[in-house]
Amino acid sequence: MDLFDSSVSLGGASVAASGEDVESPDASLPWARFSAWLECVCVVTFDLELGQAIELLYPHDVKLTEKEKTSICYLSFPDSYSGCLGDTQFSFRLRHSVGRGNRGAWFEESDTYNRNVPVTLQREQSHLYGYVYFRQVKDGSVKRGYFQKSLVLVSRLPFAQLFRSLLQIIAPEYFEKQEPCLEAVCNEIDQWPGPTPGQILNLPVMGIVIQVRIPSKDDKPRESPVSPKENLLPGPMVLPSPQEQNLFQCFQSMLIHVQMLWELMLLGEPVVVMAPSPTVCSETVLALVSAVSPLKYCCDFRPYFTIHDSEFKEYTTRTQAPPNVILGVTNPFFIKTFQFWPHLIRLGEVKMTGDVPKQVKVKKLAKLKSLDTKPGIYTAYKTFLHKDKMLIKRLLKGIQRRSRSEVHSATLRRHLLELTQSFIIPLERYLASLMPLQRSISPWKTPPQIRPFSQDEFIGTLDHAGPQLTSVLKGDWLGLYRRFFRSQNFDGWYRLRLREMTQKVESLHLEIICDADLLAWTRDRSEVEIVDLILKLREKLVREGCRHQLCVQEELLERLERSIHTVISSLPEDLQTLLHPHTHT
Image 1 (cartoon, rainbow, N blue to C red):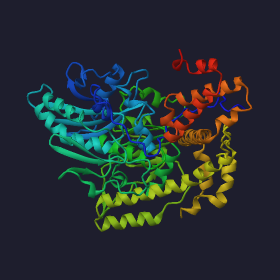
Image 2: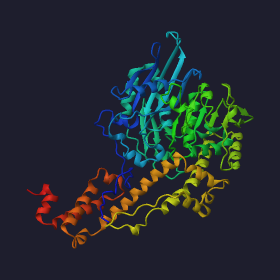
Image 3: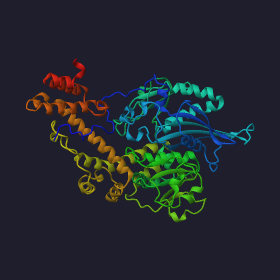
Image 4: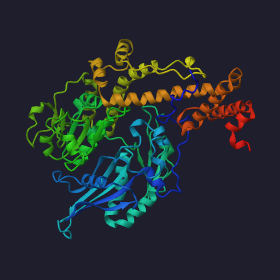
């Protein structure tokens, strides 16, 4: 087979070269540094004639479609059932309009940020996040009697905690000082360094420095996210994480059902979270999505969803099965709308039983009939795995001792991380067995194919290399895997890993080619074969992004280029002219 069969691709998802530095956005481009963090900043107000409307937009030339503007307007205000007085913070996620251009090359799928960050934190391509600070206070000078306004940060980054903290600094000042204050803040953000994984970043705004470390894909799972020794400035606001929710606060009334919640997320089941406020529903949805980390949740999720959402009809039709999506809602109207969905989590105000939060019960879906439906998890789902009773006891004891919620949250996150790893490790081990042996890769042939994934073959490995090696949980692991294979999460995970494995094989192949003696190979080859080799080899080298996408050392590629030059120099002059026209007259 020909060495450079044109059907063999070097493309695919980007994999960073070892030790590669993360690039900063080109500061010469307008709003380049700002765009590395935010798509835009919106101010949404209530207009008596128009309803919710965008009052202000930064940068002024940002390209939002009318559909996106409408969605942002509706999603930036709590619905009337929430009764939110004072200040309220929450988040939403909306679909990115197809065909709209991005602000600069910083958003390319193959950018350095996405190559160096965990898949759960990659910049979104098909969706936008909105981080909202809403204020509603009595105001006699306004016809409706209330001041109602939202400051919204729109971003492709899933940094809920970072942007929540940023809004807590800038929103109160903006509501007092209006536009000049917001313009100054945007100019400050335009001076920030790029979001560099693995580094502690100091982000100054309005006299305060936010200090945060964005996780790197090379971090160890339990590595502390912030090292106090690296505090470079006095008294910064230190965030332990840019994205993590307080799992205990989100799950405190469902602690005895954590196992069920994890399985529902792993399998990508359709779930509605109904809560008394957009704050609770949006934080709970984000906490649920993060429960399967480091596995990427590949289904759709909407932390806050209203009847005005452009996907409302799509998600509420009864002519087909409910879509694989998690919806966070506050409007009781949704109880009737979603009563045919398989799983609905109804949250209320947290009540205490002694020192312990009262735990909601699992209830039958048939009881979902009235607007005053009591809190509970309405589902017929039966878990594949048994509950971890030791975890529940440990959490409840910690609560009785009045330990900080951050301690309980860390315990929960560690448990869920270990559970996900126990589930994923056998899959990763099996995938590794599908890779061709390195000794089977020849510089003169197309690299061997990766063997296809066989569900039955994988199931056969579980007896001696299953999750029982790392997890004490008992139950039907086999049934859980079979159900997982039918989920979008499996499909997304396998596609990503297959792309990475393909690139690994291509990288090894290119390294072997770089080490090969091309001149010796050409001695018993015809000129046609040699020219064909050079053209196809050159095509591999110049393919866009080749050096950045494959883990091949620069010096090896340079050695290969020298070898190509040596081979060309051994050819007759007319062929040299053809292959190197710029070096001859």
